Image (cartoon, rainbow, N blue to C red; front, side, top):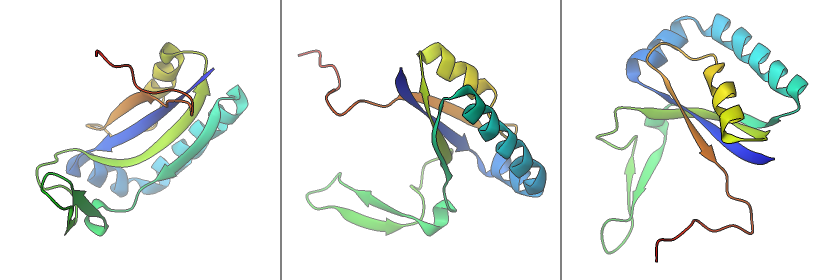
Length: 123
């Protein structure tokens, strides 16, 4: 088994569509989480606050610079995540296909490295 994070990436338009149907979206999200529990693959899930409430710490200069709000050129923002413990990347992708998401949204699927793993290097 390996842990995968399903990262919800929305646009301004998809986030607005989701908020317009928030009761339906919450009901389908609860059903999706129930399905994850029944399958024994649920680890965690959380939503994120509005990106305008966050800050960005930029390390591109000599010293970190903190600015308010989302990164200026980002067209897609992270809205939340599901963490799953599944047998394969393919299983994680199958669950990602079932995430209740508004049209225009995307789900990024990333394996979570274990404590004793480091990313592979070409060096």
